[in-house]
Amino acid sequence: MNRRIIAEADGGSRGNPGPAAYGALIRDAESGEVLAERGEAIGAATNNVAEYRGLIGALELAVEHAPDATVEVRMDSKLVIEQMAGRWKIKSPELRALAEQARRLVPDDVVWTWTPRADNRAADALVNAALDDLAAGGSGVVGAQAPTPPERPAEASAPASAKPGTNPLIGWRGRLHGEPTTIVLLRHGVTESTVRKLFCGSGGTDPGLTDEGHAQAERAAAWIASHHRVDAVVSSPLLRTQETARHVADLIGADIEVEPGFAEAAFGAWDGHTFAEIMERWPTELQHWLGSTAVAPPSGEAFDAVDARVARARDRVVEQYPGRTVVVASHVTPIKMLVRQALDAPMPVIYKMELAPASITTIQWWPDGTPSLRTFSHVPD
Image (cartoon, rainbow, N blue to C red; front, side):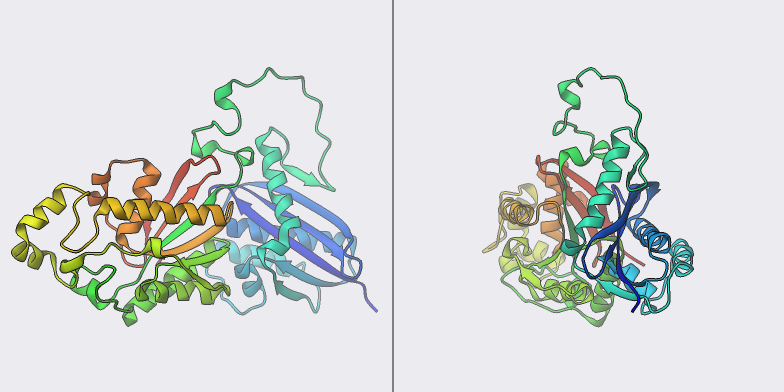
């Protein structure tokens, strides 16, 4: 009976693209003993490239240390597993080349297994160790093949402004600052109200997505799954966001959590009307509403109130999923509020943002409360 081994791999990028590394190890399938492991920084790359490099690294370890063994590959990247298993197409030329390199190392009867991120911690730890070593001035290589670093003279203590937890330069933050919580904000796809440019908030009509809206959400979900390792999917309680979130949840095999704090603003008497109709029927009320975010539409909700409840919802997500990645399906107003909060901008800035349907806006919140706006209103092809 041939020996059975499990090859575990992961990859990650601090920036996507940004400084990247992979982690790879092989273990005996019966005893669970780690036979060999390696983590290595690979320069600037995307998460997907780093994950493929992790796969190649794990297969190289299998060839070197257990050339006659039967191999099961376990990764938390659904993209890599499904593409290598032949169930998903590989559109990126760069990933296609890496997949071909991996196939040349694949033994007969390999088993491809997707595993939850929580079960792939050993490979993930090698990724972070390699990036931390690189950030500290090392080689960026850890594990069995890591070189012994030369001794370095003691350095003077860093000034307080450069110590962990006080670095305000987002692009230069390392793991010493902890892991940021990544919130991938997904605006819902189009509805009939979107097409007709109607005010459509909480407490009024609750339309679902059109066929075009579903197609938009499907494209956005595919993009998110290929660029992020999603740990949870959260939605506002409205139908159009839950239908949008469903495309992401079904793709990654997750449940949808409903968070009322991410619902659209309540537009009260204006719900179902166009801007021109409101300007004609409620000219004074509209003027006051546009003049102050503390003013609500008749029987509606002021933007200041929306901002406060969105901040509370954000805090609940960050507290519940520290250092993880969460997709939040929401609406124009809540997403604008979160961007405003991330930039510490005055409230009137919300009138200068435009969010496309099914667009993706990504914000990270670090453990010390520092936010980082990564993408804004990106619409996947």
